[in-house]
Length: 422
Figure 1 (cartoon, helix red, strand yellow):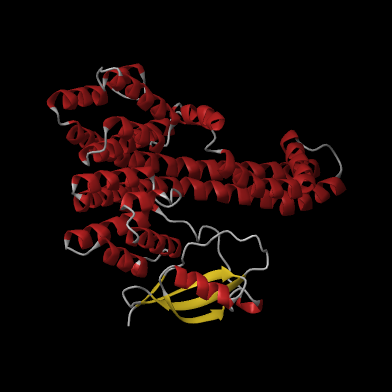
Figure 2 (cartoon, rainbow, N blue to C red):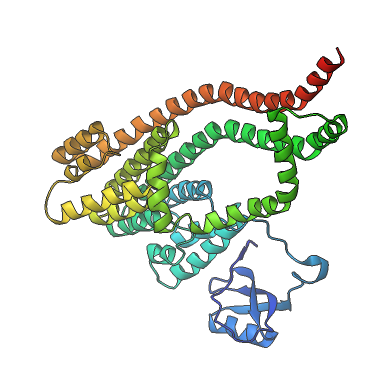
């Protein structure tokens, strides 16, 4: 008989000595359900399960987390990725359009998804839906797993009676977003790897090779050339500050992840990214593609335009586009056009504004937005290829220049000794 895993809603406990129990129960349909629950004793677990309409089969204290059986969670293991959501949406749409009930579809999704976090969340969502809660309401209770874009589109699909079509659009939207992120990663992989290699090589030479030459130079006597003096000074300073730099390298990424979404930080960083000499254009195209695709998808799904603008502004990934979306919202509230306020924001090229204006006049704004998104997806492709072909020789020259300059600086005193001997 098929089994499923579901953890019932846990009530807050003040006792710090709670134990974890593994249980097996029969639900209202007679299906065997397994899961874990925290309580003071097995009797409390049985009472809680019965209060939820389940028939306990077995309740045992969990052995996980004791001694060598302790569970180890790797960083990022509990995160639901966009790829997980894209696959889930595609499978969900297929099952709903095939006539499967929501409960059956959610059960199958929770059993076959590779993400443990998503599986647990879908089991909770299934329990909510089983008690009569709307699917969108159940999804909204997990904002860290399901983005606002998905929640609002599902709500529109439920109201309009076309949930399967909405799920297909969601899947296409998430798949396009995954593909876009893959392009960005592929473009940035090479320069990042070369940059890391350059740092490791420079640090290794300063810590291990330069001190050997410095001792040899001091035994020779005489005055060292200026480049060699600078290199020896850098080596001495790095040996003193190395522990602090290691701590800083570990702490900075953690601090950045915590503060990068704060308004004060985004108001400085996001506009600066758009002004970068080479990468600024790429950042702009990525933001425009994401903005137009999300807005077009939500409008096509029947989500109200004001609500759509509020959501896509925050999901664009750049505070500059978020401000533009807020201006458009105010314009729409006052009965004016949607595309008009965009002319005041330089991040939107004239072509985008004109295409949105035509789409608004013809009543095909969602189609026009998807055309804009497709155009900028192609532009991102072309830009990343151009950047990759340009960055490769530049990074090779950068790495060779740094290592070569250090080698020349180390050997200059030796050349001077040879000249004295002659």
